Image (cartoon, rainbow, N blue to C red; front, side, top):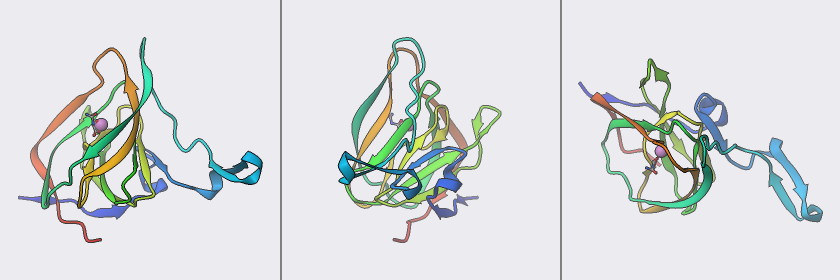
Length: 166
Ligand SMILES: NC(=O)N[C@@H](O)C(=O)O
Ligand code: NI
């Protein structure tokens, strides 16, 4: 029995239980630099917990996923948040779950626009980066430091994702 996930456009409200959408929201804008720059302020906060932890910036170059795609696992980072901001101008997929007694619940599938980043709040279940079409770069802000910051869960039966229609 295959369980295909419905896809929804990524939105701040739909994603709110899981974290933040990093996009130029006019409600957050303040003019700076003598009015020459619009600052979309504090769209997300980086969490980096534990002694000796620090927030870092990296670039992830993700290879495109092939479809139909089987979501066999989810992961989470107990000690910090993790954000992905697209650099290559392509849409991508975001898969997150509520926590149900320490395990991921039914995943939620979102299609993110090239002008939208996501910030997974600390300890939120998500699938590793899912890029579309071609290898794509993302600026990633997350936690570095001592301790184990990765928890994985493998589903007994995978959830499926069909080829997204552009
Ligand atoms: N492992 C790693 O740094 N990447 C994952 O956390 C991910 O969410 O892509
Ligand atoms: Ni992750």
